[in-house]
Image (cartoon, rainbow, N blue to C red; front, top):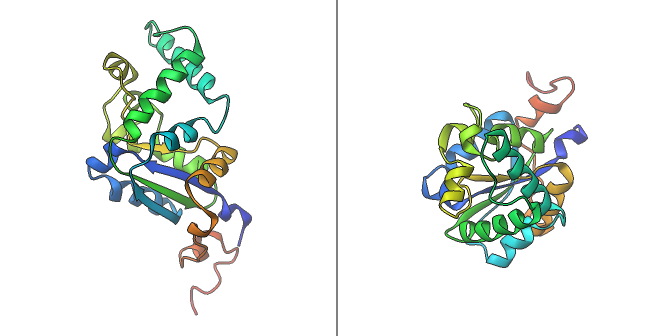
Length: 201
């Protein structure tokens, strides 16, 4: 089986996704594309666990702040600050409140191009500008401007790792190695075996 099939990514269905009974829909989208669920937890995270998650990359606050400023400027709006780290600090505090407000579903998904495919299926961070057909584009109407007006995190249903290295760090943060299960799905033969061996056996 191809090594591509071993790529893993982290997905968290956030409290709003759980409260809106979208767990099954989210899982269905990932299963339909051919990804395999290899780990799953249901819990209410602790604030420090959430902060550590979002700051595994020491540059995360700066990056998220720069992205937020750019998004505001593209829409012709004035950002709440011109200091990216200041915006990042605010985002982390809001996320801690949001992510600890109720239970979340933490999942590890595996398959070829898992990180990229999950990001494509989930859609952009801001639901308002996410494409129709993505999870956020289809199920959420929130926007950065609404979230900032209400001094809260944007409600966008899902967290998904941004790249392969980030996925490895995040998976290690949420799961022990023993909690990730190695197994084979019948459909993997169709997805990855070179000659589709065994179909007519």
